[in-house]
Image 1 (tube, helix red, strand yellow):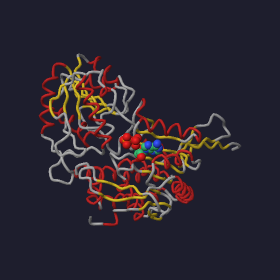
Image 2 (cartoon, helix red, strand yellow):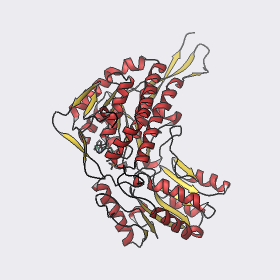
Image 3 (tube, helix red, strand yellow):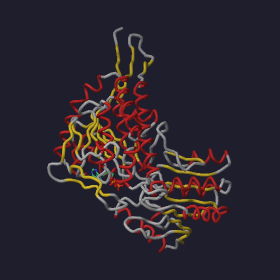
Image 4 (cartoon, rainbow, N blue to C red):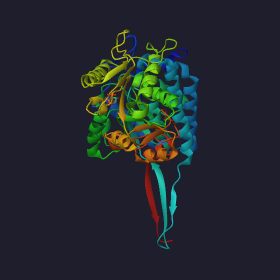
Length: 480
Ligand code: ADP
C-alpha cells in the first residue's frame, strides 16, 4: 500500500479511533485464506456511544451551509480517487472481486459523494398558493437527524457512500455498521472522510457483532432512520425491530432478476449484456440475473454463445493478471450455490458448461450455464448469488412477462429486443424498480436505484436519493 494509514484496525467513534478492548473480527482473504486485518468486535455499548456522538454532532452539522458541507464532501471524493489504487487492492483482498472491478467500484462509490456534494446545494422547498387570503404556506426540507446504515459485503465501498453521502449532504449524521466480512474498506473510507474535514461524530463506523449492533441501532430512539442493504430476510427482521420507535426506513433487499431475450434481439449484444449482468462480482450482486428467459426461436443459439463466452472467463485471485472471476465470499455462499445447482440437476437441468467447484479449491466455483430450467426448481424463486446461469425457454411475449413477474421480488429486470413498440410494452409491464433495455448494466449515481415488492423501499442515488434523508416541514403563516 502506498498509504499504510488506510489499513485501520480500530473504529471511528466521535472522531476518535477506538481499538478493540475484547473480541476482534479477523478478516480473511476469500481467495487465499490469508489474514488481511483485524477490527474490533464491538457491541451495543460502543454503538450507543456512536449514536450519542452522532446526536451531539447533528445540530452543528445541519447548521452549516449546504456549500460548507458540499466542500467537505467534494474533498472526500477527491481523496477517494487519489487513493483509488490502494482502496481497490484492499477491497480485492478482503472481498475477492477482480482488481479491475474493485477499481470500478471505488470510482462508482466516489461518484455518489461527488453527486450528493452537488445535490446538497439544490435542496429546495416550496411556496404553495394559499386558499386563504391572509396566509402564506411554505414547505421546508430539513434533515431527518441521526441515521443508521447497515451494509453488505458485496459492494464494501459503494453501499456505504450511496447512503452516507446523501445523508451527510442533507445535514444528517450517521452511524454505519459494515458487513463483518468487509469492514476494512469501510474504515479506510471513514479515515479519508476524516482527512477531508468531517467533524467528529458526523460519521461513525462500528464493527462487530451484527445482532448486538443492529439491536441498538434499531431500538435507540435517537436514531430516526435506518438504511439497510442486504437480504430480504434480515430486512424484514430489522423492519420489525424498527417498528416500536417508528423509524423511517430505506431497504435495498434481494432480487430475482429476469433477463429476457426475444427472437428479435441482437444476440451478440444480448450475450455481452448477459456476461455483465450475471458474472460481475462472480454473480454476487442483488441485480445479477437470476433467470435467463429466452424465446424458443433463439434459445439454442443464445445458450451456445453464452456457454462459449462463459468458458472464456478466468477464475482466480483477483490481484492476479487477467482474472475475471473471484471466489465466492465464504463457505455459506458456496454451499447455497451448490444446493441450488443440485436441486436444479435433480429436476432435469442440463449443464452446458461448468457445474462444480473449481479445481482451485476454497470457495472458487466454475462459471456455469444450465439449460432446461423450469419453475419447479428452487433457483426459479431463490437468489443464487453465484456464477450459475439457468436458461428457461418461453413461447411469446405474454408468456415472458408472466414468468418474469412470477416472483415476490422486484429489483432489476433486463430484456433485449430491437422492436421499439415491444420495448415500451415490456418496459411498462415488468413489475420491477429498474429495467435494463438492451443493457445488462444499469447502475450509476444519477439514476434511481431501488426495488418494488419485497425487494425494498425507497431509492438511492439520483435526485430522489437525497429525499430519503429529508423531512418535509410545513409552515402556515397566518394573520398577514
Ligand atoms: P448476506 O446474506 O448477503 O450476508 P445479510 O442480510 O445477512 O446478507 O447481511 C447484510 C448486513 O446485515 C451485514 O452487515 C450483516 O452483518 C447485517 N446483519 C445480518 N444479520 C443481522 C441482524 N440480525 N441484525 C443486524 N444486522 C444484521
